[in-house]
Image 1: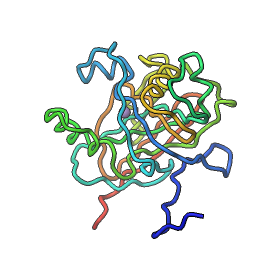
Image 2: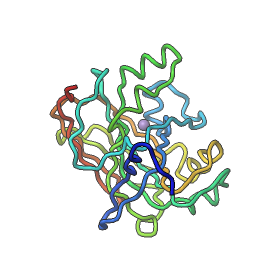
Image 3: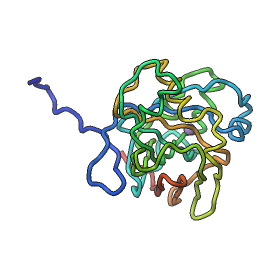
Image 4: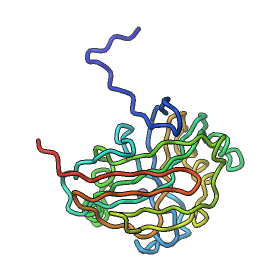
Length: 233
Ligand code: MN
């Protein structure tokens, strides 16, 4: 048995709907832009191939938590997203085989320090500090694909303090789930435990400390968060 000089870190994980078991998270991939209207609000050609960025696995937090307003930003944005949970390893997966690698689905929020992202874009620097911070990947309970099926349509929405801000449909995904899994697996070998945040519909915006975020995907699940005061050192 390997002996570690310090105790190994806890395994990040996501809840399962209707179960006390949890889904161990290995990596988090996120698609940059995947709904035509959201791509347009950022001035992009909706036919561009998808691109990916990542968050640390331990950025996942459960639905229902309070997330402290993060440091280095005054423009924290929500992005509601369908989350794909990979259950079977695969490298260079063909599109027609891709859904067979999906264990299940969830609803996540890709929290984004938009002001840092804008600065990074202007300076042609990496996005990491804008996307990959502590508690930046809240994800609601997963539902197994065996139960939900593989969604190709369904309402996706997000509300702040009860007012709907984002409203879309999975049918508007520029690159559907099978394409995303296939294309992502062309870059890295996907493994069980990998999550893919599949992009957000139009209507992204800022939240402040004290705001409550709620959202969902029809037939998949919901998520609820509160943004708290900044943590003190
Ligand atoms: Mn996103």
